[in-house]
Length: 466
Image (cartoon, rainbow, N blue to C red; front, side, top):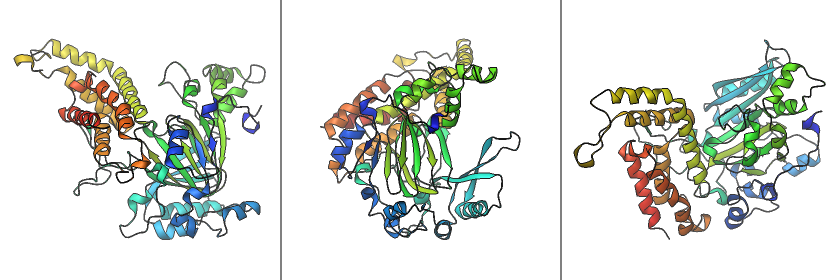
């Protein structure tokens, strides 16, 4: 039984079904239809029709409109030489999928940092049959905007419905430090990150099953080519795991593995395959809710918070993507940090016990000093360590989170366009409980005082809103 080639009746809830807009919605419609219910959608080519790269067709070999190309059966192809000529010195991770010579019939992935020029040369060799073990090449997480020269023309502008973007609206980095600088000192993560990407891949290249960073939103516009998306709503994610009740247990690798495991039966599979199938008891429940979506050239897809997905390029494909967040899904990001910290604390329980024992046998045991003054003991060292590990594992923790919130409360990305974000009173009611909850957390009392101070400044700003 090949599940991937069968039509399925989705068991998705009505308010989970992807919306296929025939028109480009305004912010209010998008907010009510997609942001609030955390619901995916496909947006029409009209949304990006005015982009310089869409009008010039500079990244495509085909110069005719995509509709003509589709009607004539022509597959859109990327103008790789144009990318090399314009952006050849840029660097990006490149995922090369090859035949696994140690396991016949299987594929393996290799991720290498390359210049765009070198990646294009590899793609040309692959296309001309000079890389016989290569199955696909995928330029991923390419920070094109970040690497542009200041005088260069940007290939696109952010659509209005995505303008309320808190993750990419951050303070500029200090002039004497690299843009991507990151430090993890005393539980602080002074990260100026960039979540603006371009993806460019050959036919068959893919991104395996995952959710987006921090449970953020994402949007992705196909400038050239077509993609297939497999979308799983948050309510079934536990069923994709080896142990559904343990949210850190192993996730099924990809859609192909999922299909193979579901198709396994005692009658036609060996004992090992059946045993592995039993290790993932909820896969049928997860598969019953999957939505399989084909995204055409020119279309934009919106992926809500905490929706797991796999993406495959049905043709050569180049897309412009962003991860983003705002006041609507900020609670999801907050709780993802809480979950990450809980996981780290659990993994460091032996370190915690060691620190507690060391303090209890020392005269520096955490205790009260002068008139309620807290004396630093094992708690400060432990909770700082937890923050540092979380930053290394997940990319951020409380310091970066509250700095992002504070910056966007004082300098919103849509400061001159209040119609492109929720009202102040709504934002206050949405976010104030997060500050109150954070201030009551035990770790908040032991982290660098500046982190708690920033959170309290957010509280003051929120209380004054509306």
